[in-house]
Image: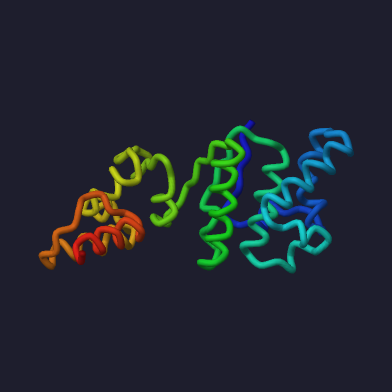
Length: 196
């Protein structure tokens, strides 16, 4: 099965209470009440929204609403989760919370995640990156393979991760930096090695 989370959680939230919203799809699928209660509780705990279970979704922050939408999909136990710009309307903290939840789903629960995003910092966390332009795949590979080609990525009117941009600027300034730096940890380590 495939679950989908959209850009605006308000387009997915249908109930007036968080736990009822998370249970909505399960009710429609005819899941027995005991099984439904267990799945809803598990999904809310996994998404970090259990404490909000009796609250009205419209009173939650954008990140919390998005995690309600994710919990509703996860309760269905999909094999694959598609995120269509799921963090686009969130502030940096909300984006980070949602990305931590997604990482947990993928690494700890084995759910395949397909994330459509314009945030290259998010794309850099993926196992595999596809860059599309005008409906065609124009770049494909690991994040390191894709984002090491900073000029090509920029030519497609996309940003590159900040660490890759910093690495390029340091190389232009004559500082020898290794290829393939796309995250701050690797950038800091390379600078540390230079200063030793």
